[in-house]
Length: 188
Length: 144
Image (cartoon, rainbow over all chains, first blue to last red; front, side, top):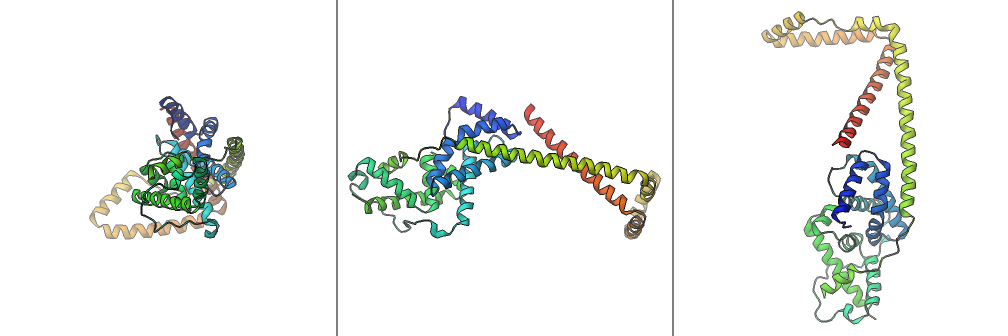
């Protein structure tokens, strides 16, 4: 969710006005940030419907919380953090078995030689990869979404997920090992 | 290999963005703002009514209420402070006795109407102060 310096200034002004209750400024922020927020949320949500519900609830919570939020804090990571919390709340209410789990706790070794990414066509690999991400554990999907859709640093991901940075590294490592195995087992 | 996976993860195809999603969010926000405006109006109206009722209840009974307020003078306070310095234990014991006596006098003197009126007026005043403070903070931010 990166923006240029000029945009940053305009958006900071919008945020400032929204914080003091200007609905037009807030609505403009909704227009600006919803597409990127949706892409990140969609990557870790179970389906489109859930992603849309999370995005809507995120903005409602943001509207209520913005006047009390810390000034001069970048809006994007704050929004993503709310989105993550909304998702966790939704998932907490669901049964854990709603999520397919690829496992991957024990798989840490790096493979030698060409992997499935090299053997399959890029289109195929990407399709498999998307399926693989959808089957990951929720916490792994989140780090993948924040890292690759949101372009967040490890530090930012740790802050958004409220986790130690080493846990973020571990989650990311395990998620990628799991995805590598998923590509191997679905090799065509 | 891990670099290749990183690259692939960064270019994974995404679902198309539902174009009306921002509009739907804004429509829900409009509903929520309307509802909070309605709630605020109801609260304002209720507090105005409470203030009017409070004044209407307390004004005819003002004399009774004033009679229960302890009469403080500067001399009395000075005398009490010097007594406190001389023998704090005894003064505090007397004070707690006086407070208990005043509370029981207040309870018997105050009619239920006065208690209600005080409640209404206090609630209205508190709400007014809170609203003023939050508006003040918002204005400061706009000016800054």
